[in-house]
Length: 147
Image 1: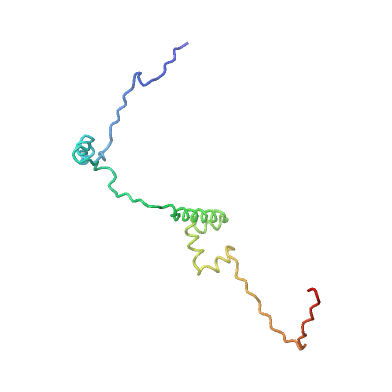
Image 2 (image 1 turned 180 degrees about the vertical axis):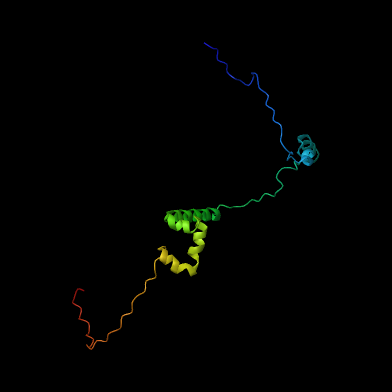
């Protein structure tokens, strides 16, 4: 039986070398600024690390800000409703929910939306002519006790 050899961090290693092809994209003029020894020297002099975040921190109570979440929910709902449409209708809008929403929210497209079955036609109540009755109006019946 052959002896099993386990690889460990202390065993023999194979050195792998890669040769860059083409011109290097490294910007050598930043070498002085990126050298850790120069960064530490600057820190020793000033007490500041210059290459760390340069922005100003803003503190405040943002617990009531839900605009991102609400907007994301709105977009997800719109995408879900668009996905529920038949494939032929989605294909008419290049499978893009944004294109569909632009079409659907344009009032000029109401008739086309009705034709596609995406919107209900407005209910038009038929006007009935008022018929005058020749009968004299009868007075209401007297109320019985207990009503």
